[in-house]
Image (cartoon, rainbow, N blue to C red; front, side):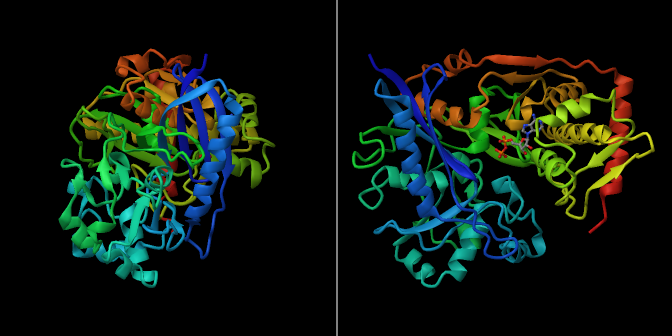
Length: 502
Ligand code: ADP
């Protein structure tokens, strides 16, 4: 008897993974491979799309070998680092240039030019996004202006573009031999060319960016009842499998966490933090420095939207304690060190190493460590560091509640740093509602598997998915209101001191 499973390809910023999930969410096989980070100049970050496609094939084969003979793959889903954009030749499959990665800031001048007198909010009402180097749109403008011959090839229909899920789906479905050129609605919502309500490319926006419409993939829902295409039998799956799930990584985590109701939110604690709040079927514009984005659209149902806020430095602060201050030897050790003291001893740390993202948006901010006395030890600094991550997340949660008018309930967490019990407890104390950690922390890959499984009819409905979601631990708020206010007052004083250094 073979076990049915779903193949989920997670094309991330540092590596590509393939996980084979059983229909109960269990992991049956896994392959993973890192790719090169290419830094041609300060502020530039590139990936070689051809290398990523080679790695994708390798990790699919590895996952199949790890799972053994007894599994049979019923559907394939893809999730990806968002905003990173590739351009390639439709006939040969060869990229015209390295893909420009979401972190790359080379497009600042293009953003300034597009903003003109209207400012960074010029396209926000339509797209949910402020003009910023982060998004895919300005990256394609840069490529069209700087890669010799690309504009002519784009206008003749030979050069096409896509974010990484688009690139992988095109290759998996045969590439130059009739590959499906599509992008899912969540990835499309990060380009600055899609109207959030119409869920279609907006000709006015394409014109403003100077982008030939013929280059763009077709926008599809995040899950498909009729597959967009099938894997080529000559490819790494060696079988004709339905391609029916695609979703950007943070939205995939929201799905993997089963945040299907308006008001449900998840936070991923990794190098930085990414918070998404499900706001239901209407996009909520932000006044508090958040992004409005598509959360998911399952074919046959209306699109669901989210408010998103990100924190630049979270786990990266723990790496800094380890590598720059050498306070600890490994990241998990920070918890025991922080627990060795009863509280922060009045010490606050604002890790504004690269300015502050949501909801403050202060590029002029830099890190500060304050409230020091002779009493303070490295343990207090460790504690202040963990608390700083929770304060930053709390500030985004407050902004989300303000923008959406939704009183936020429980917060679902995942990511490497969610393993830290002290941090999770402190987050619950600040939030005043429970913080819930599920048993499966591979929520990103799981979300793409769920999207594919819904499309292929392997799950009957969202309730079916919810029934697989298991709580590993719930952190209940336990701090008194006075103590909480005292902590927040200290944080806000520290925050003020971080502004205006640049
Ligand atoms: P990413 O996907 O961004 O690479 P991960 O989800 O793998 O991140 O999380 C890794 C980050 O979490 C690292 O920055 C590391 O410093 C931090 N981290 C991992 N374990 C712990 C822990 N127990 N306590 C605090 N931080 C941790």
